Amino acid sequence: MASTIVAAATNTDLDTASYFELAARAARSCLERADVGVDEIGMLVNAGVFRDNNISEPAVSALIQKRIGLGLEYQPGRVPVFSFDLMNGATGLLHAITAAECFLATGEVEYALLVAGDTHPSMQRYIAGFPYTTGAAALLLGSSPAAGGFGCLHTSETTGTADPLAWVALGEVGANGRSAMRVRHSNEDPIELAAAAVRDCVTEEGLDGDDFAEGRAVLLAPAPALGFRARLAEMLGLTPESVVGVASAVGDPYTAAPVHAYLNARDSGVLDTADTVLFLAADDASAACLAYHPQPPAVAAVRAVTATGYERLGIGLR
Image 1 (cartoon, rainbow, N blue to C red):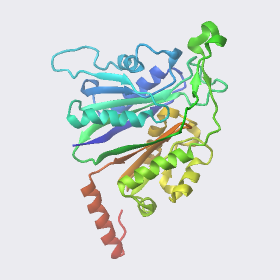
Image 2 (cartoon, rainbow, N blue to C red; image 1 turned 45 degrees about the vertical axis):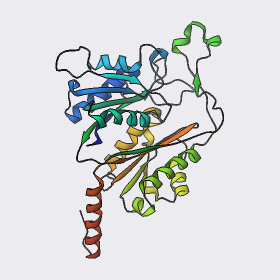
Image 3 (cartoon, rainbow, N blue to C red; image 1 turned 180 degrees about the horizontal axis):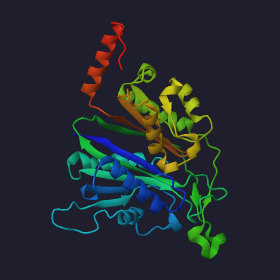
């Protein structure tokens, strides 16, 4: 059986600026949508970077696990839960998907719950200079014979040494280090890194421009840079409609961006005809692209052949 996206959810509630709480809420919503209980989850992975009070120990995943009551007691017949943090900037969630797949493929876990999102460590929603939207997202993965699974993860990185994206200037903040964060505003354009990762993925998947133009393939490109999606589409020779990002009202959800883009594409209907969905994540230091197949290749091929046959007869499919 192949891995599949069972459910997805985001949360940007305004009554809290705690990433732990927002991630817990997104996780609960995700499980409710899937009608899956916490006792069925065997893995929890956190890909969020910026968190409450700059906490580093215990792992953020453990704190979120506690909030949603996931595997807190070892009892006969209860699924043990493996939780950990996997942080890699904007691309962390895609790396988390590939890590979770290793456990799903062997049957060691039935469901893997992934969470991502960010907040300023002061837990104030609006801080000058902090560019990311306070919020969280959750993605529930499972195994299904009716899915085609994920492809290989393709990455692209800057050469040489990358400057830190964010840090705490301890010499300046003194005793306020838990609530402080300095974020570097880079002038680097991630489009070259993103295009390289997408090209590798497209080649691996055997896709071409027609697949995107005719709705069989969709690229989720949530990078927040001005005009990023349009420029990326032009650089790759894709129709602009086949490249979907995050709704402008959301801002920059950073590590949670791939889930926002996925839900945006689903709600707009562009996933209805897609056999291949490319998840892209990028920042000024790296980019990653991962293909997802909502259904097995054989089913997708049959649907494509059937659609072609009807087109030749002048009949439209609904």
